[in-house]
Image (cartoon, rainbow, N blue to C red; front, side, top):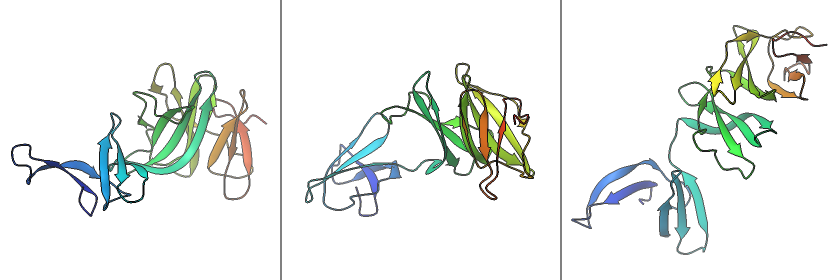
Length: 193
């Protein structure tokens, strides 16, 4: 591990030579490194040889660590975390109740770069976003692992989008985030006043 965080693979035939650089860089300890392990999920565990601590980090990714929305599926006991996509569509990461990424569910494409909120309702995760200043949503069917068609959402009180959402099990609640306006709607996008 270099001082800049680059991880090098050493040439086994010539131990003083670098064979190749491992994709990504590590943050945390870049000096005083006592040990390094990369687990099966690609997480780097770095041990300090002076501070008696271990840092956990990951290499570079097309997914940022900026959460934009969160929904909970009480049937499967999974959290759905909406994050910014870097250079592409926003993504959903599925986590179990311990916070570990569910195998095969580490990057679900939302189909949009403008996702703002998530809500769980009746076996689907509803992704809220704005397109051309109009509120929209798409349903991600959990059991079928498929993304549905775009649905226009009726806004209330003159709003044009919802920035956050949740559900009570029968209705989706949206909040516009700008004018302190909220609204309720069903899975067809119709106002459910």
